[in-house]
Image 1 (cartoon, rainbow, N blue to C red):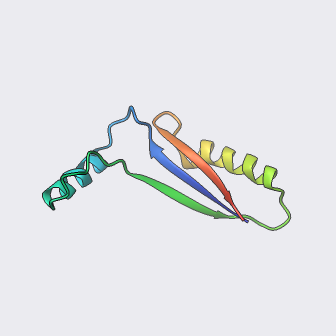
Image 2 (image 1 turned 30 degrees about the vertical axis):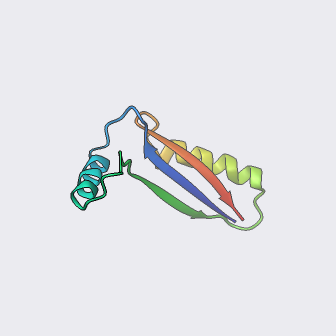
Image 3 (image 1 turned 90 degrees about the horizontal axis):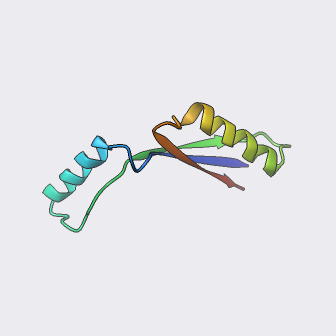
Length: 81
């Protein structure tokens, strides 16, 4: 089993890297792009024997406590088979 955690800045937090990418895209002629928000993701391999619910609880805790800063970032967890 594998888990994927997506982490991105909250919509209320400025994203200078996303703004830079958006400006670069406009400079390359991509005028239909309105905005860009950057983020990151983590692929986490899970040992055999854990239940899907155990994995979800553990990955949610890891995402909240380690992978994301909940003050300025939000995250989403996907459990992959």
